Length: 397
Ligand code: PMP
Image (cartoon, rainbow, N blue to C red; front, side, top):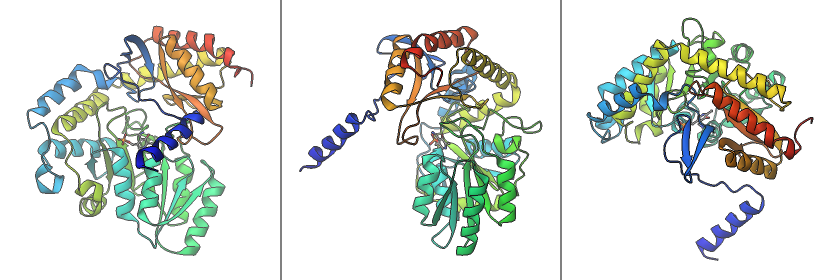
């Protein structure tokens, strides 16, 4: 069979299982409205939790940043590291309460690069079963002994830590602070306590926490700050700049030693072109807005509460989470696709998430909320869900 014949056969199998993913082409990044196939849609699938991707200040900062060069022209260690990157890293370190930070071109690369730099074959990585794909791939690529614990299950984590200790080598525990497809938070205080007990290092992926939650002194640093974890307790924090910060790229924050080490050993940092200056400038402006406009977070929280109250009144099967990620588990892939298509026909775009992104039998709508949504937008979403979901026979489960 030729390459194409082989690939087409595999694609046909994926279609047959209702797992084929369609690329949607929107006219613009939603803020939160966008057009798809000439139709105006209200978007509840983006990770732009604070609405910063369409803020004039952020776009103006990007335009000013582009004057420094359309691209960084080389990797950071060659000549692609600019003052705008240095300033962004300083601001991130301040925001997260860490000694230093390093920007990466994406969160995917930051996770892979960090895990592979810190761990090798003699070591162990202990991961939550629902960790993001980039943490899973980092674990695989590192060659370390990979152990997985049941989702947020502390007994299961403890058992895996015991087996890692018995094997010998360093131990890294890697978790999402907020799980991307479930919206729930990791029990970070308890996880950090187990890490202390077993002499393991903790790495937290703040992709969905950064900008959205924090503590009094670090109000948008993410779930580690919210849980009160210090740099010693959570020595590796990864955050993305393409979600609440509305731009692209990512960072790792931690001790000066960690950052100096990653510059030397994280291959996806070393061997890739530096972040474009426009993106760094846009991300810096976005972080300044997070700091200067705490009302963005309050508005987001209000929207989450309003949606949850409305959805609960409709009897929708919501998960127990107050994060901007509000999944509605429907189970069957076919149902999820049918419901998402009908919602789209009503002018509402939500994520339709199927395996292998989530475990088999847990296909879901992934509804995400933003500070940029208005009350009327949420009412429109709730009305559409009310019209469509009962027909899908998911209510009263
Ligand atoms: N970690 C988590 C939990 C994520 O949800 C994502 C993005 N989907 C990433 C890492 C990767 O980030 P990026 O999009 O910047 O590559």
